[in-house]
Length: 112
Image 1 (cartoon, rainbow, N blue to C red):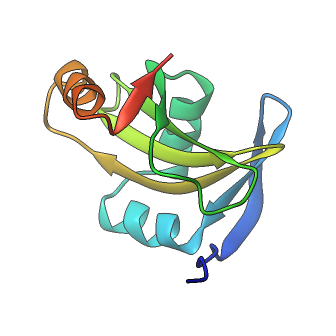
Image 2 (image 1 turned 90 degrees about the horizontal axis):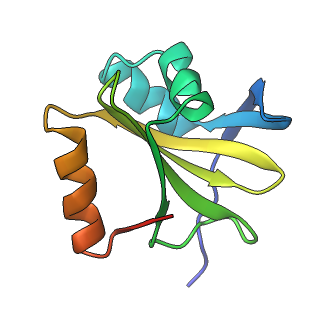
């Protein structure tokens, strides 16, 4: 079974010396959910927490990371290597700490 790769747009910014690209999926979802690119970039630049996603990255050699923002109550999923690819984002009405704890307990995300 072949893996489906992302359609990339960008670069849209630089963070920590890395180019930031976005997927078409991210663009659609951020519009649907009314989450600005500025908010997402701020979350990646100054996250409340960074976790590792246990779901394997689609891009070979990349690590799938989760950035959480307590200020904006959003989650941002990225794949990172020498650049950052923003895959998707969503808002949560749940307490961000409870959401993270639940995902860690179920083995979906790993802290550290």
